Length: 175
Image 1 (tube, rainbow, N blue to C red):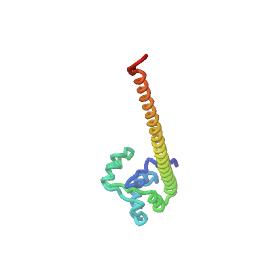
Image 2 (cartoon, rainbow, N blue to C red):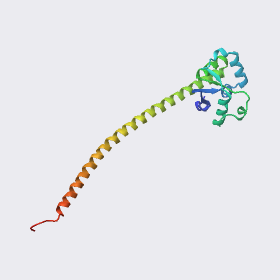
Image 3 (cartoon, rainbow, N blue to C red):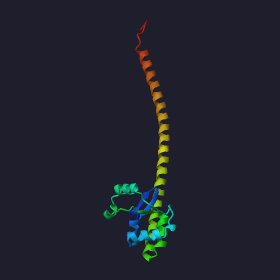
């Protein structure tokens, strides 16, 4: 299965990467209602860190911010379940079809790819900060060197002005 199929269906809610019940149902090729029934029958397998139900405010915010949600879902009276990576893995024990297992494997790979991407972005961000700090330090050193050059130039200019004044002074006495 193509990983790019899953990545747009992974959202961040409550600080956790999750997939929503209707997306999972379509991937597993079951009805959302059936998926929810299976989860409710086995709710002991889904603690809060595996699955939670969105509240109405979270659901409205998600509808507002995500334009890739199916139109039919947006007006559903019930808020969806959100499954963390562990919750998605647990779904394969509840939905025991071959399709569910294959889909779960692909979804797990998508979660791993997202973690790798986040890790890479974090690493790049650290490198950028190191470069910025190095550049600021070097610029600071250059500023000091430039100030020394300006000071020497000012002294040289003052000496030249004094020398010109001396040469152009009104001379007394013999020529």
